[in-house]
Length: 159
Image (cartoon, rainbow, N blue to C red; front, top):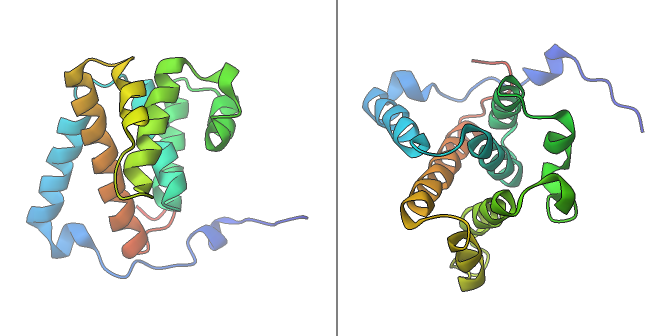
């Protein structure tokens, strides 16, 4: 299968509305929430979490942004490519990263309506309580950004 991707295709959708202009107080609050959610979280881990949540939420805008940010922070192409299959790519991610990714998936998807005890316990084995709180804040925040971008139809390269 061959695909031809161009910048034209990447920007085929135009945003439905501009949140920053139409809901400026909300947008400012999101910026503040984003900054607060990242405090104390390792930047490498933060980008892995943001990319994985964005994959699950099918948010192309955020995937583009956070894979670029991860690369700027020194993340390898190989780990970025394998992130969607992190469970099968055990040798590429630390146990701590794997615990964070499992928590990211559980919080993002909420398949059973709750985060399973074993997922939380796995995270608790690698993170202190304050670190788990920050990690959850980060996961919740990227999910909010994903929902904003998907709903308003932001496409990679638009902003």
